[in-house]
Length: 329
Image (cartoon, rainbow, N blue to C red; front, side, top):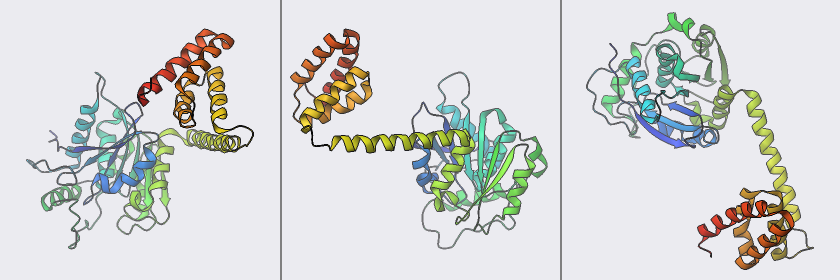
């Protein structure tokens, strides 16, 4: 029977309605220290939740039993279950570095239906030999001595080389080109051993690739989860929005209308076009340009006559909500 080891969850960004991405840390690091920079990029696409190892970061739960990689995987599942709101246990995307990459492999063996994709950084299917010693000058308080020793001992007993072929979930293996602890060859063994795996090497990154190259790691995790086509579409959307912003800036700077008149024209166009989200954003700007609430009301009355009452009523709701937030009448 597996003895579960509690882990603590740390929210790093994103919204609850986005796909869940679980991030795990390496020995001697906290979730916040390792993943915060990459999470800035990932939070645009995921609800980002990281977890801390025993005695690391936010996890100060007393250890009551020896720590194992299987026990850590069970603790991760319990933490995810606590976030669920329905009868069906939540599924999630996973990215882990070092020890957390080993936990990721264990999750893929023990609960494959729960993991939609797995990005594993800097860890092979067996513990490195020799195991890394704790630096004597480690004073960053990311891990206490008991927690560090317990997790290190758990890693020492990890070996799933003979079971890799059972893993069918898509696996991305990420290597830091400058990682002296885990050679690329041992990571290639994981990518080749699972049913659907591939290896990516990040130039200029060491063992802690999310710290050394956060944007590149975030891109790899995102593409692995959603596919290159989805990423290309998002990039195209970003470029389109930037182009529209440039055009809008050029139009807004034309001298033919004073700012107050331009605001009234803009509000009218947004009402007619039914662009209510943008209308709500434009109302505070119009007020700053000297357009009064009475004038906005009159604009909506005119729109009701010329464009139809349903269009004007929908616009009125958007404007009223914005004015209420601003404390206007």
